[in-house]
Image (tube, rainbow, N blue to C red; front, side, top):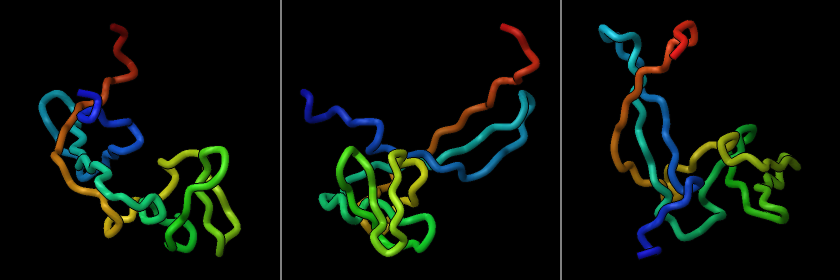
Length: 100
């Protein structure tokens, strides 16, 4: 049963487009799931676009740039490394001026 559970860090959504609707603007996202087996191929450095590697304290490191990141959302997905498109989903962002 637990083998079907997916952690949040293994799923990423990417904004594809914004569509006008009667209710506002709908954001359409592509959802990708990490199916790869090599964490060294999961992400690319946002500076030099080379692969980063996992390291101590949950950080990802880029040796050529001598940089590191805690937050995976700051890194580029390495589409050749094992990310697989699963589906699209959409949402209409809430209007901050409306009190509910």
